Image (tube, rainbow, N blue to C red; front, side, top):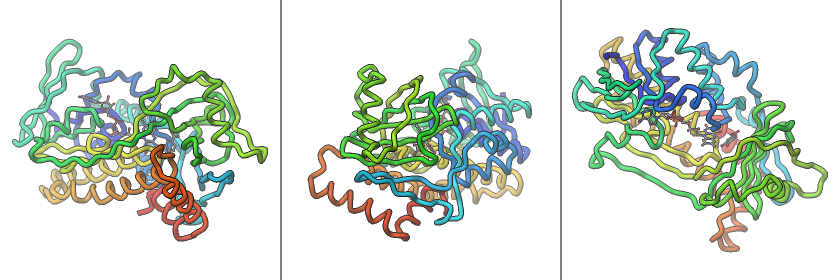
Length: 388
Ligand code: FAD
Ligand code: DHB
């Protein structure tokens, strides 16, 4: 088998890269370990920045997002028994859309298949060879047979646990990491929305995020022990925790409903550099992870592949390797700003068990500053919508 770009991983990064390359007349093959059903139903991100909405719309895969996604012009920060609105649109002229990541995946898979794109699901034993030559190869098993896919480039879009990042020798790589001492317990609930906008709530018992998926399905998270098990949490216990952390006696009440999905995610900040080695280029979670508080992970993946598709197009169109050569350097500027923002939001909104009374007061003062200073509210809003 031969193609121009071998793409490992059919997450948002791999699928969007394949779609962008196709629009530029460049062929790719996408290899994915999971089944189509699995990638189209895994519950993950929900917030799309303006730039992500724009690229999906401009490239013809944004129609359902426009119709079914919810455009939000603000978010709320809740602490000390009060809620404070950050008006994203007034402060930045931009907005966000709440539209589930697996819906983006469905739209991209449909577009690739409609264009006769090659997506191979349920592959196994993926391995990468020859990235230091101009004929890199991916070996894998598909439907019981061993295959070798030869390409001009390999795009490692296989997430944090994939095979692409380890294919860059340790001696050439530097990893930066912080693991947080808490996780998020996420639930999907059949209920109407409790709020018109997302609520990021700080409480002494821990952070809560009130998000949404549709007029009838809500997405809620609360800070938990990352080693806890969903089996320890009955529905009653979950609702008690949400009510305690969110309500202050002013009459507003979180609407309950049937909980039909539960899961715990760990939280880390991680950057691996360089994001390229020879003919191998990493994009998305394969190269970097952010804690979810800033809603940046999916959006960063989109930013990476936009840049990578441009570099690959320059290579074929004008034999210029400049875009590809500067891929890591250019991508890292945006990545580190998002790493900073996600770390900042996480630090400001979560409860650190080992925090001293002094640190707790400073954390509260920081929140007061953010909601009372137009400059700081603007900085939060600009980062949140990705306005740079
Ligand atoms: P992935 O989505 O991880 O895709 C990688 C794909 O590669 C997977 O399908 C995997 O099966 C496949 N793969 C792995 N190994 C191999 C292999 N060896 N061979 C072939 N295929 C392989 N981000 C936001 O922007 N906003 C949010 O609101 C947000 N909320 C989140 C909430 C949760 C609960 C979680 C878990 C994440 C959230 N994120 C959010 C982060 C976001 O989901 C990720 O950043 C995003 O999925 C990254 O996309 P990706 O394509 O790089 O990687
Ligand atoms: C969602 C997830 C996030 O991490 C976030 O910051 C906002 C919303 C969500 O799943 O809806």
